[in-house]
Length: 162
Figure 1 (tube, rainbow, N blue to C red):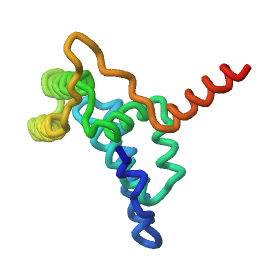
Figure 2 (cartoon, helix red, strand yellow):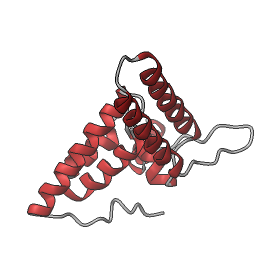
Figure 3 (spheres, rainbow, N blue to C red):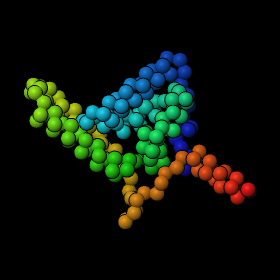
Figure 4 (tube, one colour):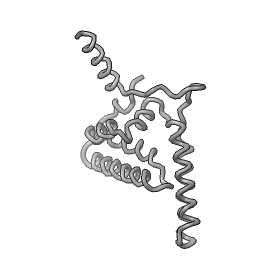
């Protein structure tokens, strides 16, 4: 199956600058989402990858090789879905963050209402993303990028040649 990201045309000029700005903003929101419950990180990571694929091959490659974000991106590229545990963790994080903010914080009613609205939007996004199906009684097979697969096969050939 060909990867649609790999066949994306690069953009130039003002459009490239806007894509770079959008990708950077999406990564900033993803980083905030990793730390702050209530904001899901996965949709922002997916958006950043799509924007960087068109504007910055270097940033795109950095995200694909990232230990933190790489597996999630590879799941999306390969299966167009997230793993079930990602959804569960996101839902728990949103509910916990919103709940703690509303019940333990001495903030006003307006800020609590905004927190609830932001949490609901986050939950809508999380439930909008498709989830990978897992074989019954097992876990999903490990997902490797084409580069990793080629590297592993070349390493096997080198070992067998020795």
